[in-house]
Length: 208
Image (cartoon, helix red, strand yellow):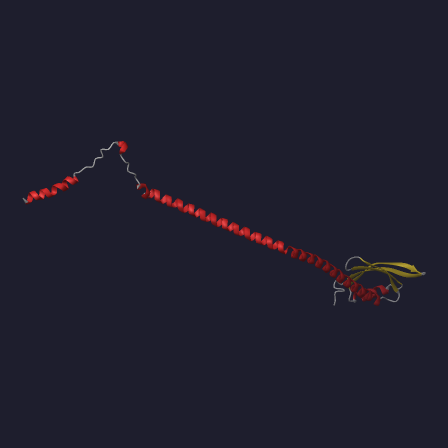
């Protein structure tokens, strides 16, 4: 009896395991089962994630570039506005600079005249103070900025050498040289024409 019961107990499970489901509906009425297994396929998931990340990065970069360009344009507009606002002042400063240049030019010209005036005053004093009694000058020409040519007449030729020595000792003169000498007649008396070249000191007239 016990064996029979055991057999009876196993029979329903055996039947259940041997049960086969057969769909007897016609093909047009059968429901096709959808396959969504591709969603979890790595070959699909990782490329999709990479594309999404790339698109997001491009959008972020584009937004950053746009924001930067807008900021630079705003800064440029602000600078232009400040320049336009300060333009009258800049124009005034430019005018003042031009006037200052003109004034400086005039000041330098006046200083040059003052130095030149002092130079000639000192030079004439030095030339006349040592002039011998039997000699007189007939011309004084400026050959260069610091070069002079002096022409004169004397009745005593020795006075020419004496005059040249005294000239070289003057504060305004650096060097003296005899260029020409010739004889002539003055009121029937023998005299000498001479030409002297004088080199002036470059700091002449610059002393305070």
